[in-house]
Length: 75
Image (cartoon, rainbow, N blue to C red; front, side):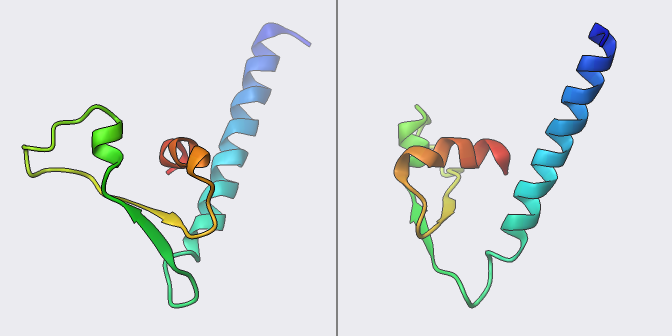
């Protein structure tokens, strides 16, 4: 397999993985699920709390705290 074919295959797999994550997340923002809001994320990421433009992330209730960074990257 050539280098170009390997890159193409890896790119296709990444696109499939992203779509799977998105499809799993589509139904998580409804009546059936509860979410944990972590307002300290901006502080943990080294952000400035004084700007009033802080992002607040919502996570599935059963998500382990160590998985939160990867979750933000996927979303």
